Image 1 (cartoon, rainbow, N blue to C red):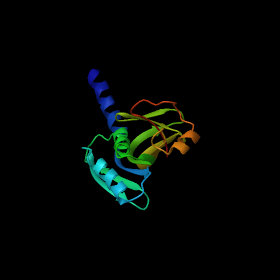
Image 2 (cartoon, one colour):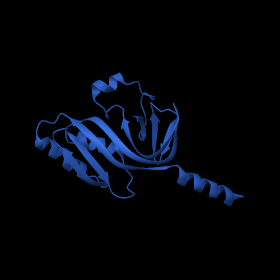
Image 3 (tube, rainbow, N blue to C red):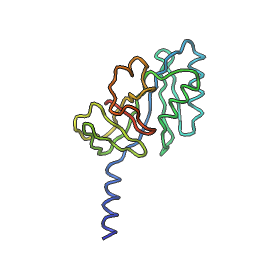
Image 4 (spheres, rainbow, N blue to C red):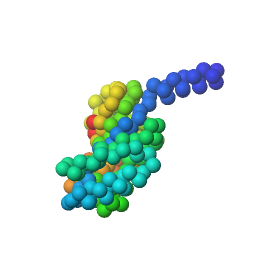
Length: 162
């Protein structure tokens, strides 16, 4: 009987998985190429980061990760802040594999919990971009406008829109 339950749990864990494939961060406060370079160096110093492609015209950084790496959104945000800037927009591309998203229900993905604010009771499958709207992941002006599902989410808990 224990073997049967273990087998069912294993099947469920494989059928409800997801992986962060890339992140796009838009920083605010950049005034020159040296600013962009500062953030670029800071992001590249993170051990799970594989590559960073800066775009100075849009103040964005496309970040890809090492295979099977555990991605820490808070650490990415902190590295931008440590370079002296703030995050204005944070979009993560996540490869979902059969994840059920329901209104006002948390979605657990690895060590992260997502509250999808605009969920339409849908099955998430394939590569999907989610925009993190927690305080510090969007501009200060925008964060005041957004009604968050949780007022002060804990580390690893993110309010997102699809």
